[in-house]
Length: 592
Image (tube, rainbow, N blue to C red; front, top):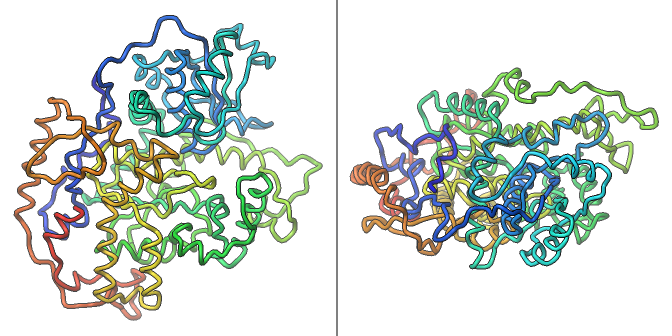
């Protein structure tokens, strides 16, 4: 069984090749030590079709954000296979089931393509759209057994606790609210279940047609200038900032908002620590997101020019647009979802027309309903419950994140500002990095060591926009090394929380090529199937031609930005040419 390519929108990596210089290769070229790795999520060895006799039906309700839903769906498919059960298409976003919210928001089809999901998994599990009529009635009367499953439950839990109940009642309901319900790293004898997770995440889970089409249009618009682009996910959510105690990064009303959220987390046992945390210390430990300005400085230091196309993902950057102003100043062509699409294009994908409802009479009308969601801070210690319109907006965020996800996966370069969510687990950016590691391992994906980055930033805090050669060299070396070291680090840090954040080596194969170095630490031992050979050899020929075109990249300046004086329209000046000779061989053969 050959797994089809995931996206019809998939651009062929640098098929739009330009005359290649060492600088261009360093900025946009592939990571050489990962070029021999290729996606292969097909079963290896004997793999039976689903048995005709099912143990019963597994009905699932999934609560959470985009990355939590995606992780959970992959887990419940693996669990259904483990139990030999028939999976009912999961219900998502059940947290929006309150007055004024359409049931369509909870539908799997609101986000994903149901038919594609069922067709892609036909050889893995039985999937049906709904429960039989008699079981539907029993569920409405709450007469079917239900399990609120813990995060990262073991296969033992399902085989010894859930399966007996399933055999007895022919149906069980699983409520998943922690962003995953099966342990990330399974025993070696269950390795096929890891590949099943990959088939679900990277092949079966396609977004519904309207979302796919809009994302495709936006990708075409991004690539219209004929140049590659960078995708940046800030990861600056209020939940993550509160969980890690990064309130003091803002020093204004936003600090109080973060503290409110942290107090709420403490009451519910999500956070176990002091309410007030030394944010400066947390930042130095690498436990806080990098500010957009800092990421901009890293990219400019690496050599990306002021006119580089930079796509910012994420519907909301905590702290508001003012936190993005320095980034916009450094990169003139900074775009996001809203600037690449018309308002009517976004509203058309919702599929629903939400009508605002007035607040209930008993509820005080806080200023945040009119002025913004921060308005209640000065008036109350208790944060008001979400309005119906806010709940609907949260539902729409899934669609916005789906578009961002597609664009980030396809980007020529991806860089995250943070890789953890508000529960300390891998976030949206981690899923993107895992998907890129599976689909195009050699594409440039910076996996930063924030502790090292912050240390380098602090060393030059007073002169970040006029960095000297020594500092630039240190920062570039770290960024280059993060292309490989970050992948290795993710295998021990992120993978134990989310398999999809690092699906290698289980879902990868290796094509041996004596002319290319191989990153052995990823442990990929499985040889790629023969049908991949012709395509890979063609790409290798092109790459060899590039390798012969080394040329000197040098300049006379030691400054990072050139000051344009009063006429500083690009906010930060033009990046000068390379300020000193680069060691091309190290650039290409070291990390790249």
